[in-house]
Length: 353
Ligand SMILES: C[S@@+](CC[C@H](N)C(=O)[O-])C[C@H]1O[C@@H](n2cnc3c(N)ncnc32)[C@H](O)[C@@H]1O
View: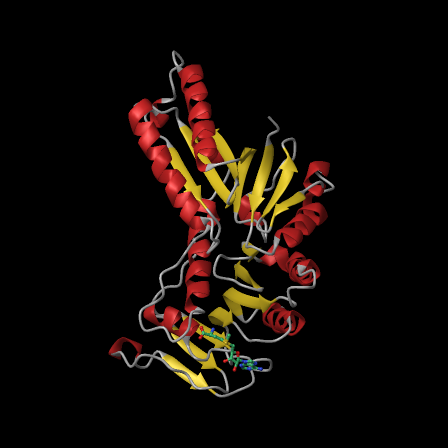
């Protein structure tokens, strides 16, 4: 059976993902240029492809290494997965697993976002757990990912627990890092900033009480609220109204300025630049470039750029952001662009000195 590396993304962005991998890593590993869109949310690469670390990509949400396509009914998927697990358990018999791996296994069975295949994923997971309980008290030390791609299609990837730890694979099923809505937040946008801050936290960077932030395009106030709840003093720039909860915690932390975010610059550098203005990506990049110039007006940033409408290829717009990063990379510890789970037709740029 053919094994391929399956790379998942937001539905509708598989073409952008294939374009990104070909453009950024095709020269190093020609197989990265040979990605085939096999699903609205998945691109398959030859198994020889040397995939880049997941966090360095823009559009990849999750890797399913050496995945096998498994067409057919629910029962066919269960039989296939059980067959693979039994073969791996037989092979492992007699060989002692590294101590830290003993007795460890994970199984993730999922569909993407709100795809109708979610009901099928839940059913197959239940069937699998029942079969495992009945037939396999000792599972091999494997991380199994089962992507339910449609009513009669699934992809199955199994790698050893130790290989999983080293492959930089997201611990979240399908790479979907769903954030809870921040209590009192006036917009769903707050989840984007919460997720971006989780990404930075993984890299050791977090907002701290007493720090300062400018939030460009702040209304109705979701991002401002996220920062203020962490004790950050926020200057919220937007001609529109803020709609923040009147909790005493917030008092004194938020200053609302009805100014143009394209032109606004703080009198003194701040710790954080947040920016979620609705406008073309080039305009937003011009703002970011102005803030990054010289010693920079901020130490950290989370900037959301809006991608062109679905019919167009969004890759060139994202490439412009990466070109801006390339100009500045010597001064910044982290510069990343990620299509976060909570991003729709937009990409989040993140940086820290
Ligand atoms: C998607 S909303 C921001 C949502 C916000 N991040 C939140 O969490 O509630 C985009 C905002 O950008 C603002 N905006 C657009 N152009 C702007 C400009 N030139 N200066 C300031 N704000 C601008 C709009 O008024 C709108 O409130």
